Length: 167
Image (tube, rainbow, N blue to C red):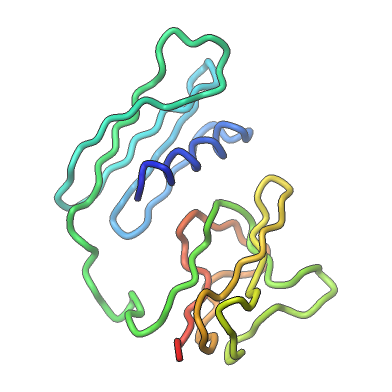
């Protein structure tokens, strides 16, 4: 997970009414908790070998005397490859934290179903974040092999949404 990605998550959590946020993906754990001044403190850790990086977090809190520090532990080893990781398929990942919608509106058909042929620029779903509806494209030419989330489900940044059997 890159520092820029962590900063984006911090901004989303800071601008929301969420007081505490935790996320785990492929061996990397991220936990954030707002303190009393509205600043977000964030830490992450990995279960494998790690490298420690410290950065200051930019916040919109009124005149803080000191910015909170961010402690980030980044895995230097890739996660173990297993059949569950679906290495034969392209994963379409959520580019943000939000709500997954399979169709443009509740009374319309889903953008795709298992077996749907898609091109790289084909819209496969919408992820809504802070009242903004973001169309997510397939990124590759292929066929939808599996839909990994349900309509209306909250999704995390980097969470796999679809598996695509690439052409």
